[in-house]
Every structure is written in structure tokens, then in C-alpha cells.
Amino acid sequence: MVVLNQYIYSRLSPESVQAHLEHHYDLSPIKSCVFYVFGLHDNYLVKTEESQFILRLYRNQWRNADEVFFELELLNYLKQQAQAVASPLHTKAHELAFEIQSPEGVRFSALFNYADGKGLTQEISTQESELLGTTIANIHSATGDFKTTHKRNELNLTYLLDESVELIAPFINAEKQEFLTEIQKKLHKQLLPITQSDADFGICIGDVNQSNFHINTSKQITVFDFDQCGYGYRAFEVGKFSSSLFRSPNKKQLTKAFLKGYETVRKLSTVEKNAIPYFEIAATIWVMSIRVANEDKVGHLHLEEGYWNQRFAILEALDKQVS
Image (cartoon, rainbow, N blue to C red; front, side, top):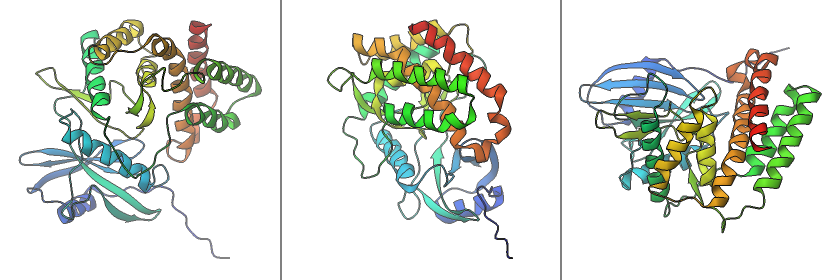
């Protein structure tokens, strides 16, 4: 019997990445190329004499061509609108990405301008949170005329909540499943009645948090990592940011500052503000499901009882706040 090797993930060497870059892009001589960070995709830091870039090699089991090019076309559009985002470069063939053959099949790769400034080395401040809120509102305002033929999941309750609950269920015990079902019913009751006449609906980044932006010495923010972008209610964006602060003792003040900055550009209705805590719960559940969906990369060790106990403790605390 012949056993066929089936690969689900491989990593390209920095030397091979550099060779691809030299073939596909008009760059000045590359000084260095290193594997930079292990996330949902592979990211390499590339430096030339004048500039630095991030090369992202997309995992084909997480993002298909439609999803990749939706993100890249959105970022390219935002660059044209003079928004503060890390945008993709065009290849010599005037494409936003190129293909790389790997043991697991074709993977797309894109080269991004490095976000101006530096990442935070400590918890985000209220001033930075307010500035981030303003930056995100400006991005939302700039996307009104964005059009693409590529498709992505809408950030709606079916995708964020119902499909997430279905993914999570096999990993948790009966007690947690019962609690999760009750949360699901509560979110449906509170969020399903909201319509696009009640709340602003449009492009969302999907993962606004303090790890996904740089800030320069002039206190200007540049946002990156639109991997989870899609169409959704803008109030969800605020809820998702708030969910990223679950470890912070200053969460309430930071969320308030973000909202203050956001509303200097775009006002949220009472309906939207009341929905934010429920969108935060939906975002918390969605993040759990993303880990489950990427079990083959993060490893089953990180989906054992300790993880679920910690995440459900957060859910229980959030549920008490809206009860």
C-alpha cells in the first residue's frame, strides 16, 4: 500500500521569499529578508536600503482567492483615498498578489508597505485609543464607494455567531454548550431586530486592536492586517475592539475613549451604542471559532480544557454586564 503525503502547512525559507520578491517586484536591492511573525498567515520582514516591507504568504486553507483579493483591493482603494493603512504594492505584472507553489497547493503572496511608526510596547493609552477611534471612523467614511467583484462572508450573526457556535460545540462539555446556546438566543433577540435603517452598515476591518497599528512620532496611526475584513455593522467594530481589551483593568475607559474619537467623525445612534456590548459578546465567540478553524496550525494543545475555561469565564462576565 502506498501512503501519500498530504501537507496542510509548509513554510517557505526567507531565501526563497527573497528570490520571489526579486522576480515579481521592482525593488531596490534587498538587504535582508527574515521570517517575522507566525500568525494566521506567514509574514516576512523585508528591508532594502531605503524602505522596509512585509511579505504576507497566505495560508490556502484559511483564505481563498476571493477573500485574499477582496482584502487587497480594499487596501489599495483606501490608499487611493489617502487613508492611513499599510497598502499592498503592485507586482511587475500590475497585480496585487502573486502565486507560490507549495506542498499544500497554490498560495497567494502580497507585499505590503511597512506601517509608519512603531507598535505599542505597553497597554494602549486613552489618548491612543481615542486617536485609533478617529482613524477607524475615517477609514469607514472612506469606504462608501468601494466596489469589488470578490466575495467575503458578511460579518452578520449567521457567520459571527451561529457558525461559530457550531464549530465550537465539539470541543466543549454539555454544561458549556448549554450556556453557549443561551447566549446565542440572547444575542439573536437583541441584535436580529437591528436593520440597516437603524444602524450604519458597511466595510469593517474586523480585527481592530492595539497590535494591529503603528503610531509615529507625530502621533499619526497607520492600521494594518485586514485579514478579517468584510461588510458588517460598524457598531460591531467597536464591540470587537472592546473585546480585545478583556485583560485590561482600564477596559471601560479605553472603550469610551475609542468611541469618543470615533464620534468626532461618525456619530453612532442610541440603537448602535446599545448594541455594542452584544456585538462584543459575538466577537468573543467568533475569536474562539477562529482558533478552532485553525486547529491544524495552532495545535490541539491550545484547545484543551484550560483554554475553554478561560474563555468561558470572559463570556460569563460579559453576559452579567448585559443581564
